[in-house]
Length: 118
Image 1 (tube, rainbow, N blue to C red):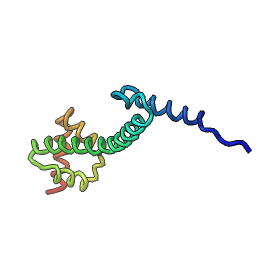
Image 2 (image 1 turned 90 degrees about the vertical axis):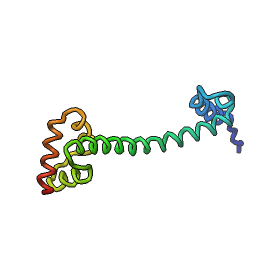
Image 3 (image 1 turned 90 degrees about the horizontal axis):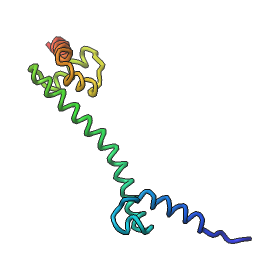
Image 4 (image 1 turned 180 degrees about the vertical axis):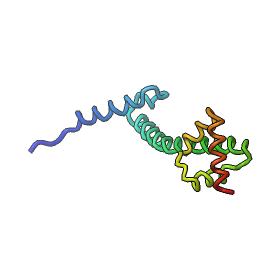
């Protein structure tokens, strides 16, 4: 039985990691071990960042809706509660877009929400 030599697989693995580390400073882009550490950290941060981005956007949309709602003398919480009671199913992303781009349509939504709260 022949022994298994890893040269081919190790070379492939090293090339893959070094390709991902291209542009890193100093030995992180040239040597496998520091490159591997940097790449693993970068991939972990990228994963976390993708989750964080979703939170950040939702927060932005809520801020925009709140600002637009307060112009019409209602806060975010009561506005969303009124829309829910009126069975208006528009997500926050679209509500924020309407608030920014079409104030008249947003005013109508505020009126609908207020009528269900009163």
